Image (cartoon, rainbow, N blue to C red):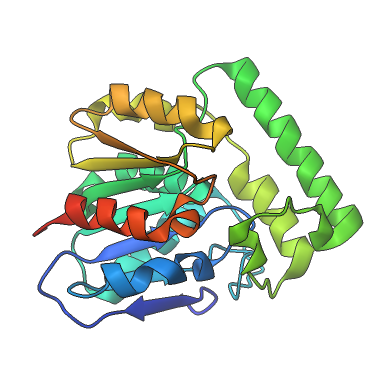
Amino acid sequence: MSDISYTLHGRSTARTPVLLTHGFGASQAMWAPNLGALGVDRRILTWDLPGHGASVSSRELTHERCIADMLGLLDALGASRAVVGGMSLGGYLSLLFCARHPERVAALLLVDTGPGFRDDAAREAWNAWVGALADDLGARGLAALPPSPESAVAEHAAGAAGLAAAARGILTQRDAEVFRSLDGIAVPTLIVVGADDDRFLAAADVMARRIPGARKVLIEDAGHAANMDQHAEFDRAVDEFLGDM
């Protein structure tokens, strides 16, 4: 884990810890508005995905690498199970982690994210967009990142090259494994989506329908980073979901 940057917040071990994963182009800094409220009585571990923030690595960037990193983080935390949550790409990886290691997941927190694509053509179109983004990062640097609250607070030690590698290795989707896993999820699941996050409203509805017992919360006046846009409302929803867990 020497090439992965992570931070442990809070000291109480009374309740189930939380592992939070950010979205593409962001860093663990995006969770700062939420840590005070959510970390009162539990430990929260935030981290920078490979190629993001302070996580700089020469290792190949893949989904498998990220899942292994998440396992390592839970081991470093000394947690046999955790609430596993993430925003956008971080939410997709959280679902993939749950599909492959359900024994380590106590609950899921899915923020402005989706389960990937069941349809091959839709996946190919997504991957074409990702490839163009990676090329643009190579050509124009960090200016190629669409402006957003989460990217605005991120500082990337590996620069645009790190993000381009992460786009090709992690943001690209290979198959429908995550989508197919939804019906079999057997842990409490909270789906949070900003009312103005047009690209992920339908995905949130799909997950709410397919994940048994899932609860969906729509946050008004919030976009793709609902936890930042309306942090107090987000914190209330998550705190109610976590309860005494």
